[in-house]
Every structure is written in structure tokens, then in C-alpha cells.
Amino acid sequence: MTGTYSPGTVLTNSAWTAAPFSGLLTQATAYKLVNSLNDLQQVSADLAGNYALGKDIDASATSGFPPAFAFTSIGDGATPFSGQFDGMGHAISGLTLSRTVLVTPGSITGGPDQRAAGLFGVIGTTGVVRNVNVNGNISDPNDYGSYGILAGFNYGLVTYVRTSGSASDFGGYSYASSTGGLVGYNYGTITRSGSSVNVLAEGTPGGLVGINAGTIRQSYATGAVTAEAHTGGGGGFAGSNSGLISQSYATGQVSFQPNYCGGGNGTACTDGSAALVQRNDGTIEQSFATGQVIQSIQPALGPPALGVASTNNGTIAGDVYWDTQTTHATRDVYSGTGTSAAKGLTTAEMSVPSSFGPTYDFSSTGVWAMPAGATHPVLRWQLAQ
Image (cartoon, rainbow, N blue to C red; front, side, top):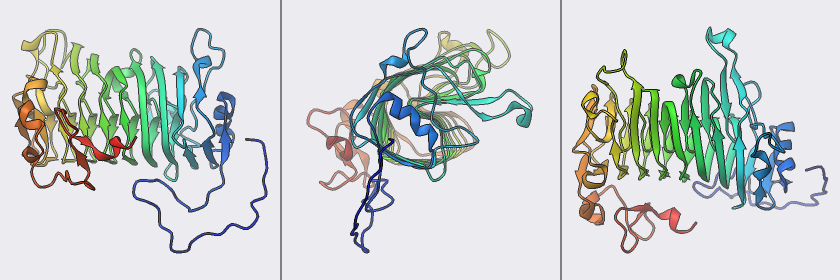
């Protein structure tokens, strides 16, 4: 991180183009090597720099009370991360995120400060994060904002990133927050990424992202999502989508357990959780969900288990599916003014490629694969990881 080098003569190919989904911006890139937890924190000192992990990073010193090393998310609303961060296939493990960074002062919005927490607080429009595994825990920020193990907000490009661990957000203004296993609020692009994070939150929780207003392709979520307290519900993949979700899937259990719904205890809920997204105002295509939906501790107060979305004011294509047996859902959507041509399949049908129609490419170079004995497809890129 503090060294220097002489590059000598660098030869590049003028005809070079980046491989699809690689996130590479140039053929030859000079990186500062991150080899320790302290190095990782020092990325904040030059948010426009190019960084690469030189080894796996043990971040367990950020846990405990008080922690030996309290990690501050990289980049905030005023100065987001605008460089490149390449994990080179390495992992950051044991990262505890208990501090938040400022995104928008409350004096501007007329409300409370908007905060963020993640390995990155805010990834800016030119920021790229790629090829890294992050294991961590977000421990109840108790603020209004967006939270994800990788990033609170993403405006840039995230590719080949996987997260694991847990994320929880309760109290304060959490009912207006978004929490995701990978990213809290996505305005940018997420490709070929996945999360196995268990999310337990108010507001808008989702297995991969809390809110998507950008583009997500070839990604997945397998963690459990529990929407509790003051909430409209959660989604196995995204809490809310106003952008594009394509060639993606969710398999985690989704639970909806509010204690306040639409005006007080005992009032019927007009919203609820769904196996894929809680609310869709955008477009969902070539995607599916299989996770069990547990709708409410008082089922009579809310909608039934839902296979795709609770509310749909956007477009859900005919190549969107849900497993009617594992989700326990007989309906795709509960309410809304949008269109949905989603189809319910049995578990046996989900395990047969021909059930998914012509848009799903199961060829040796296609997007999808059906491993031997699998009960649902996986993304072919996962097999190489």
C-alpha cells in the first residue's frame, strides 16, 4: 500500500476487449496490494485508486465489544469509492460492520440523516468491485439508510462477488431502510454475484438487495429473509425492484412477521412477503424462486404465500417461474396493476430443463445448467467457482 514501482515498458494489444462480465476496464492495470486489515481500511485514504487483494484477509478483529479494530465502511455520500477493487478470488472473512457512514444529511431531506454500512459505504458511478468473497455481519445499525455486506449503496459495477454471514436492522428509523445480503440499495449494475446472507430487518429486506433501481443479471440469493416489526414484507431476491432483474434466482426461506400493519395491531395487511421480490415496479425476466414463504404469525391478517411478488405494478415475463411445492404458494402475485405471466411448476418439473421454455439456454455454453440430482437450475458460471 505504501510502496512504489517502476513499470518499465508496458506492451498492450490495441485490439483487446474485456471478457464479458469480467469488470476489467484496461488490459494492464497497476494495483496497490491489500495484504492486511489495516491495508483494507487504508483504501479510504485514496478512493479513486486501484486495489487488489494479495491474500485472504482475516477481519475478525472487528468483532467483540469493544472491537480491537472498528472498521469504517469505505466511501460515503460525499466521497464514494470511485476506483477499482479486485479481490483476485481471495476472501475477506469475519468482518463486523457496526459503524455507519453519512450518505445524505437530514438537513437536506428534512428528515433524519441517511446512513450506509457495508465493506463499502457507497460505490460511485465509476467504481468497480469484482472477484471477491466477503463474509461478515451487520449488527443492527439502528439508523435510516441502506445496508449490505458488500455495500450500502451501489452506483457502479459489482461482478463476481459473493457474500455470506448475517445482516440485521431494527429500531430508530429502520422501518424506512433497505437491507440486502449483498447490497442495500442498487442504482448500478450487479452481475454474476450471489449471497447466502441471512437477512433479518424492518423496512425493505431482500436476499441479494434491499432495493434495486438498476440492473441485476445472472445472480442468486440463498439466504433466509425475515421481515419483522414495522415492515411491508420482504423478498427472497429483492425487497423492491424498479429496475431490471434477469437470469437470476432465489432459494431462501422468506418470512413475514409484522407487529404493525396498515394502521395498528389486528389490521389486515395489504402487503406481504414473496419468494422472489416483495414489490415489483420494473421488469423481471428469466428468473425463478423456490424458497418457502411463511406469510405471517397471524395468516388471516395478510395475503397467502406468494411465488413471485406481493405487489406488481411492472412487468413479470412468461419465463419467470416458482416452485409451487417448496414455496407453498399457489399464486404468483397478490395485488397491483402490472402484468404477470409467471408460471408455477412442481419440484419435479423444476428439475427438468424442458420445463423452462426456449429462453433458458442449457447448452454447454448457455447461461443455465442442471447438475445431476438437482431440483432446480443453477447459473453455469457458478460451476466454475
